[in-house]
Length: 216
Image 1 (cartoon, one colour):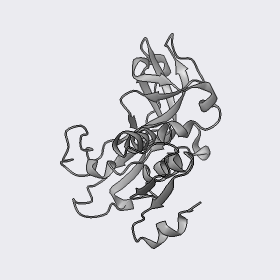
Image 2 (tube, rainbow, N blue to C red):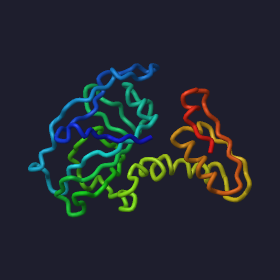
Image 3 (spheres, rainbow, N blue to C red):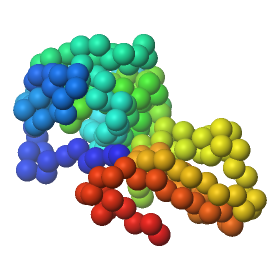
């Protein structure tokens, strides 16, 4: 899921989201576990060669972030968040507002190659860590690079084709677990677009989520 990150009432302020406290390994996170704090604006005059200032447009909100709220994540490829420090997610989209890079100019929409995007409104970043979003996508729906054209979309497509061995036009039946999730809903749309395929979506018995799910 992607979320817009902006506040038009405070155009000249910088702020970030910090982990105020850990919710506990088995507890759901609550609002009080997080704080939104004012932080210094990046100093344009201090930009180094091949550095840019980026304004965050969208953030990816992923289930895997729950692991980062614990002292130990349980996996090797992501680290735990530090208490009272700005947190980072597994993806973000931003626009360059100042540049000292030959490859990036003001107005370019970018993503980070390593995906670890700070939950901060304005950030200084190395140009070498960023990739430009294709103009057609950047000027229409840049958040797509965090969903359909991002990790969720790739995971869904590979799961359907390589792991599920589902072939277009074969009149197969596909059962998708967590069909209202980030990957599940995309997998269902992939199969619906493939032609004569029977798609069965399995939803967890959560009333609020089921009411929002559109079986079409």
